[in-house]
Length: 273
Image (cartoon, rainbow, N blue to C red; front, top):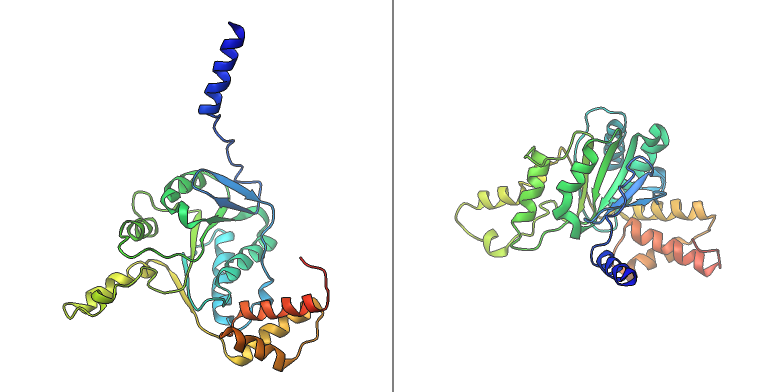
């Protein structure tokens, strides 16, 4: 009888495992929110702010806003939109890391996956009572055509709905387009009330106090990015080689510059990281 009861108890535990341990929201510089809980990240991987070239105005705005939030001063929710590879997500991470260097554990980063957006209300409830400040980071946000619920929720979280983000939280969102919501070609070409269509598409973007565009960089900016990454690695580089690399990829950006320097380091047999 005892063995039978033990087997039944073991089977019940497998069917209904114990609840996960509560997250220690004070013990790590960063977290990943999965929707079912949070995973602590021991270190934020980000380049120094000085390495992010060609985006000086955006860098000053984002870094300053994050510093104010870490210090407990009024700060904006942020939308960083525009060209791929121009350092939008790197700038968010680097700004948080820089603020942590000055303010210590007063601030933490929480990255939210696209598949966990529906659970943001639960995340906000968990963060609301914590004695530190948070930047909730949603990278590469985009909503599928026809998805009206997702944008509506995000507008409510930003605009003070019943499930709005708490005072110790600010959102940082990156997207390849300012409107965030996919535009329907048929609606864009509708001659009836075209202004209403544009207003609706930008309604979500307007909720962010700080909205910054990132645009394809110039050749000089691209070469400055290559030089910055190469100097950190102690690498010599050739201008023509760097330009040829960007031409073969059909783009000039910080990401392309970093890939070029990674290629150089590999050719030289340097240790990987």
